[in-house]
Picture 1 (spheres, rainbow, N blue to C red):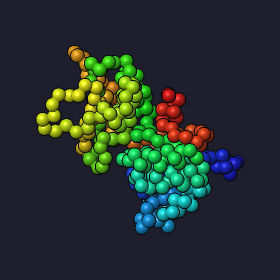
Picture 2: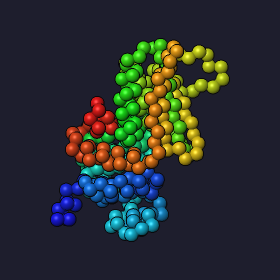
Picture 3: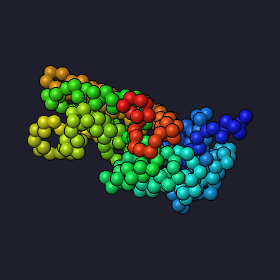
Picture 4: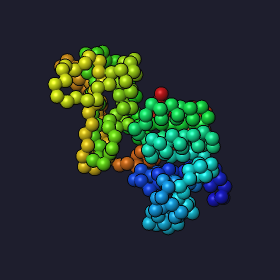
Length: 275
């Protein structure tokens, strides 16, 4: 019975397995009855390479060896959870396309060239890409788009985010996702209205701009506000994350959904049926 149950589980590879998010993804895969961890990768030269993952994590052996060649791990997987860096994520996208494995991407800081490579890979496999994998944030995204559509240009839009002091990119992927939602609500492209740099004598605020502010400090998991500031009133939509496991569990949910989806590019709004 146990072997039959395991045969029905979706086989998962976690890339960048030693990182904080990588370890949470491993935990989320283990706690979900529909998934089983079959692959774990790290960059070449990492001290965990060749070790059993469970032992490397300081516990009992899991029977999964940490590898530095993602090709082998992805080839035997049904889905890949990837919260690494732009360069390896693009490589993983190509490998997933070759293997027919679903690719769940949480990597931020991707360039337009990276995005183009991922889009090409999505012609051959299902790719879920989101700046945030929590249910609450994706509900916030839908609400942001609807509110932006309902309010006219008398309401200025500002996206304010705060994260821990170790975060290396700004604005956060979630902030950009919210900005994209606001821009979509207004029927414009975010790149045409985004305002990310204010310092010194900047002049008056550009009408229709969507502003961003990034705060960093302490151990903040993630806080995001979308502010609609109009004449005599403000509407503030807010999400506060206090546990990073919400992102890992959301990514596993995305993997299960993507495994049954047709090739293409998706986001968590699709996964949650909110589109």
